[in-house]
Length: 289
Ligand SMILES: *[C@@H]1O[C@H](CO)[C@@H](O)[C@H](O)[C@H]1NC(C)=O
Ligand SMILES: *[C@@H]1O[C@H](CO)[C@@H](O)[C@H](O)[C@H]1NC(C)=O
Ligand SMILES: *[C@@H]1O[C@H](CO)[C@@H](O)[C@H](O)[C@H]1NC(C)=O
Ligand SMILES: *[C@@H]1O[C@H](CO)[C@@H](O)[C@H](O)[C@H]1NC(C)=O
Ligand SMILES: *[C@@H]1O[C@H](CO)[C@@H](O)[C@H](O)[C@H]1NC(C)=O
Ligand SMILES: *[C@@H]1O[C@H](CO)[C@@H](O)[C@H](O)[C@H]1NC(C)=O
Ligand SMILES: *[C@@H]1O[C@H](CO)[C@@H](O)[C@H](O)[C@H]1NC(C)=O
Ligand SMILES: *[C@@H]1O[C@H](CO)[C@@H](O)[C@H](O)[C@H]1NC(C)=O
Ligand SMILES: *[C@@H]1O[C@H](CO)[C@@H](O)[C@H](O)[C@H]1NC(C)=O
Image (cartoon, rainbow, N blue to C red):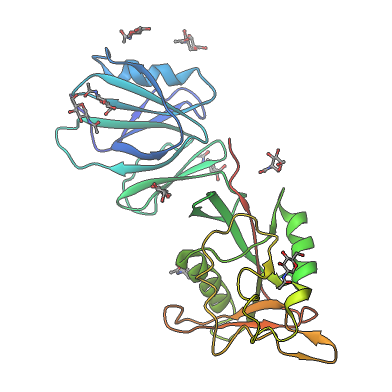
């Protein structure tokens, strides 16, 4: 077995270029075992060549197994260090240069293979420029917008216009929280801004919210984002949520304030639903391609 750390195969036309790297798929939804009889890995790569849905192959030279992955089925490939190379990951790309630097991105159809130094992360199930997060109920795409100040309803309406099935997003993990904090903090050059996030206290829990044992977060809240399972990243500040009211209005909506110290500050607060936030995250499930 001979393979350089990155090699080109079948440079024929755009998108039938294959890059071959030492690697092993570690996160995928499905795969197709093509055979356990491939003595030459280029025969395995050829199996992918004419099949438009095929995005990549994986070849294990110890047992001559050839496995095919189609677009949308593969999310992450571990870069293996063994030499001589035993495991080969080979994928279609339009690129004609070979580089193994971290941050290298190869494009293939609407997908990008991003070199993190340890993995090849495959992105493409989210709209362009949206970030993909791993939630219990599926991969979640999110983008922080600041297209004019909006309240919960108008932000949610806006989200529905920028991507199919998108809603205003909740915050479901530390990664998602870091993302919204960081994006808003950086773009505002360190000025604190409010970020409107999903969640609305039901009307029947506004009065005496604090003292009623049958009202609380998140059980008395409604969400547009139907894919939240962990609400512990709504890191409330002080005694919030308190639903405090005035002029017949109660604090039923939720904001958090951007910070560059996301690990330590609890910046979630409840506000009246007419109040507008500069930033708000849109989200939707990753496309099942
Ligand atoms: C391996 O075997 C399968 C059938 O089991 C066959 O279709 C394929 O052509 C064989 N591949 C090689 C490289 O011999
Ligand atoms: C793939 O396509 C090329 C050109 O269209 C053709 O010559 C070749 O026989 C095809 N290979 C397979 C395995 O179908
Ligand atoms: C051969 O390698 C493939 C891919 O690494 C693996 O899934 C499979 O279990 C191996 N088969 C045997 C018999 O070890
Ligand atoms: C590759 O094949 C060998 C031989 O069957 C097997 O021991 C090894 O586990 C396989 N590698 C992976 C990552 O499955
Ligand atoms: C490959 O595709 C990407 C994304 O479509 C594009 O930005 C890039 O210029 C293409 N590269 C080549 C060499 O065609
Ligand atoms: C997503 O989460 C599941 C379950 O926690 C895990 O098995 C999988 O490796 C994760 N995928 C990524 C890309 O982080
Ligand atoms: C924070 O945002 C900046 C600019 O958008 C980006 O370069 C940086 O990688 C981000 N950091 C984290 C931890 O996400
Ligand atoms: C408030 O209304 C919802 C449904 O509209 C109901 O499920 C919930 O139990 C009610 N909560 C209280 C405290 O009455
Ligand atoms: C939007 O939702 C519909 C209905 O659930 C579904 O068929 C469609 O695939 C979704 N689109 C995306 C991009 O997730």
